[in-house]
Image 1: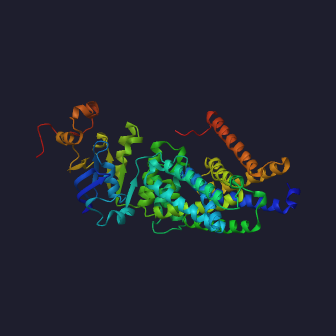
Image 2 (image 1 turned 90 degrees about the vertical axis):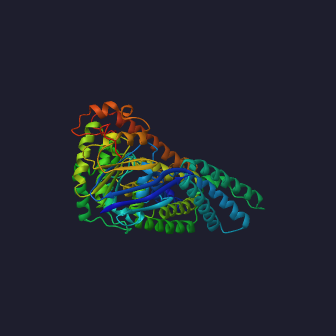
Image 3 (image 1 turned 180 degrees about the vertical axis):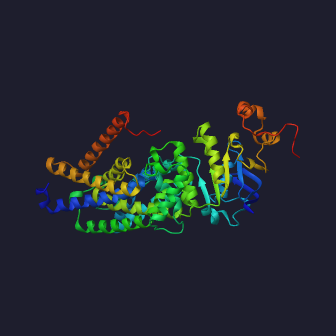
Length: 277
Length: 259
């Protein structure tokens, strides 16, 4: 690994992976406890529509994609907030529609072709320095907002009704959370790809949740665990010449199932273990 | 002094009339049981009082203000104690959620707020579990934490939605003793579809089934039941009501019909 770091692209890949781990650790924690994993998947896929739109109209990539994703996310959030029992269906429709629009617009764009594979799996080994700066800035804004609204976020995601009664601006906060999620997802997709974003959003927070005693611990733990997965995955990919994004997910997936197996053993372990009634 | 004043309230949801012509006055330091069948509008009435829903017609005043303005002075204990069981939060942090100033976004955990939260837990006999995660507590214990959280808001009115659902029969007597202890300083409003809430601690009863019948005594009359449940007392729960052996009269005599 150390020898790998002599390469510039490897250092950038490592930094990008670590930044993505932190962003996904914080957002993923909120996504998992608020049970909006499916909504995040919808945002991530619908974002492809934004990519198609930007390339068709020749807009700069980031503003176009972020604009489109935030719009799609708002629609999904508004509908799922009002019609909770139909949320999954609506999200599924927009998920599919966003991707289809993206692919057709890319088809219609003359002489230009976005590689779908690089959108799905990213190109972590080809991250330019400028993307790293953008990620640092967005990461810092996210940490700031999460710190400021921390108690409100805890109250809202734990017990929305109680939060509302206590005067927490639940609606504004919920939509704010979704906007932040859409921005984070688009940025991180550009760097590490759609599949890795979803893996990093869900797997580390889920594993850490059982051991954390607060949302803050869960965020820190998920970020660290994501970083471990990224480093281990990148090492594997360098050592055995494998696709980097897939290697990271493989590591995360193996640890995920290991943690499930450990839980099973602990519950079967009898006295001395805490069981949930 | 009335703490809750509901006048001529209608609530319609999706074209369905849920509540109609409801009048209700709850005096300060009262202990009201709101009973009625499932789907009769009890929880809707509760959500209207808390400002989570807006009435179609009529007015609601809580502590002389609109529910939305008054909601911070209502301590609310939710029905479902199983919400978000895997959420990483300790009992103490749940209570601190009630302790914080609703107008402030960034709040620092002071020693004083910690102390107040711990004493609320103490009052509910849950202080020793303050550092445990909510998911590892039993349903009854979680409910005690939720009551402690409601008390930590220093409420004028404590509202509990179906509180006995997660407590066994033996625990229920104890639970109502506790509520009557709380009722010494705070007005208490309990919602239940269970007639057992008409224990000796309840001071008045409101029956809700689209309309509302209010009785300022802790008794259920036969015609109230007729109006509410469309069947007689005997059909509902003959054994529980007759053989429970509480040292008070739960049901009015059949002959003594109210006017």
